[in-house]
Length: 552
Image (cartoon, rainbow, N blue to C red; front, top):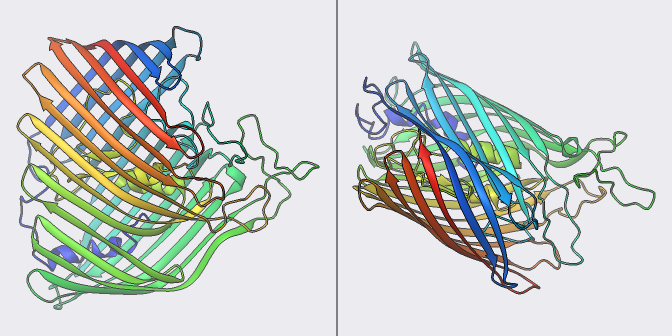
């Protein structure tokens, strides 16, 4: 479970009653209110695009036809937002085939009864496939090393009181699908990895506890959970479960300490790739390894034993909370924590320190669960809005639940890994919205230690570590009632532990101006991008677009 760790499930029932309990009406978006805010805005768009390779002076021209919808709702029973866009890119020069691109994000929570709620989320975006490969910021034309990704999750959550006990349970189902990149981008001599196909995962948790102050000055809870994922590539399977007990003890009105101990078992296995007579792994038409049906299931990662951790919780007000923890897990030390600070109704900060054994599909699911259910969107004529940091639309107001500053998916999308891995890192986001201006800044560092069976055909990642660092700045200003200016700046660093693989750097900036004539709007966008892949010259590209959008 991504970074925040399994203890968070248990502590969620204990801490609110123990340390500076939140007053009714603080945080949230009208939790018990009756007012409803909703909007539905479908649109169609026509644009003319020019993209230029500044190294070779090659210029490609496109006509871009798009249809999309932006919608949202917020009241006492439901919170959610969807922003989806489908694009058909029609090439004028005949150098590149026509393209279909899907880009969107949807997040929602519905309260079915006072005790039962339903939560879900979905994403469609494009991201880098191989961490060693190209890092194009411009995803148009012959963009190399870029895959289309689809993912969703959904499930119910139960939270109720039975006598003196608080009882909670949750179930989540997730699905992820990745298309192979149209244009691979590796240097000569680098062997291609297997390509991720699809995965299905299930997660169930349950907690029973007595919160702080109900029968004693401390709180106690017992929790357990099970998680399973089945991936198509090489019949990979993740199976894990845990059981644990936790205690929270307030030391003052604002500070509490906590400790927990339990037992955990995780096992990740997969079959071998089918090999040819010459010992080379066989690939299908999409370039994925073909599974050997006669192969036994080999263990890629396994842990079985005691886990424990302890930490401090500092909550001086309902709008500021800091958690810092250390313990033993995965056969060694582990550190995790979080900071959530609603500076005002307009400004919020989120920081997350995480450590967990992950797979690509599960980490993406968990990343979606931590995003705000009201998020900033801007006119995005190039369909690449949701591959990095997502900023909250109501940062300070939503900090009490399901929102806040936002979060980053860069750690998930640093590459599309087919292997399981231990993910460790830190993300930080600040988001603000005041008057006509909104902005967000996110940055972080991610480290993956990759796992695979020893001696398996085609396997080259055993024990290797991938790293990445990233930063992104978003700014938007309503110049008037009918005009708007948006700007984005980003930079990334990627490093693979494979021999002969150099560091890869990517960066870019773009800006879009839009003007509304009633339901009809016009827009103009320009951008410049670059990336440096060790062993070849730095690649530069630029793009420009003029277009019109009709809002229904």
